[in-house]
Length: 215
Ligand SMILES: N[C@@H](CCC(=O)N[C@@H](CS)C(=O)NCC(=O)O)C(=O)O
Image (cartoon, rainbow, N blue to C red; front, side, top):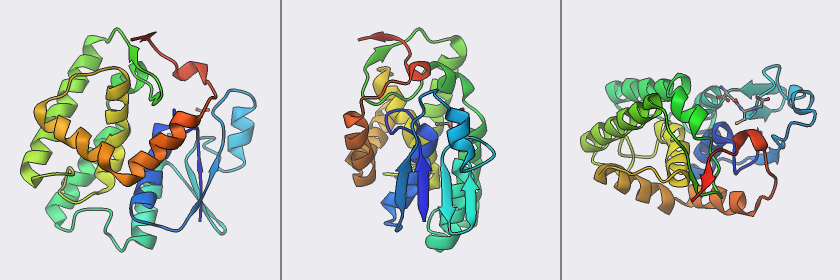
């Protein structure tokens, strides 16, 4: 299996399935497509009509969209271990994952992932509200599960939210005590460390993802 991803410094969507596959030791190779604007659509169109990464290629099958890839990997390689065992918890895990997938637009727009940078941005009220809403969501889930992951064991739900913690790090967002513990679990995770190590070595600059002032 091959996972086509974008630049590790910037590509939150790529990070999600990559983390799932790396954390659970799925056997895969990766191919990096630069997100620089030169011929971007043409380059990405070779993998999927969506012209987006990530794309998972398994023989004749191409699966695009980060959440669909996570679901496919969960079924094909993890025998369901990607989601909580309990059906109710699984339904909630799917709900919060879908919530991240289709929501929190202000966070996404105003705070692009930029792992190697430390920046200050002027946030809108919408973004501030989303940050509070998200931290409250994490707080409730962690209280209910006992941590260290949102549903106790590492799951696809964590893969959806870990990129946000990396954004919070870049833009110096202050964390609730419970989300600090979540942050620490994330930074101690071997798969996360591997991704960050490579992201920090990347030198390519993708202008659209550079936001804010140095801090
Ligand atoms: N909903 C898609 C979004 C993927 C996405 O937007 N990927 C970005 C990179 S992080 C991309 O390919 N951008 C290229 C472009 O928009 O031209 C997913 O979950 O995979």
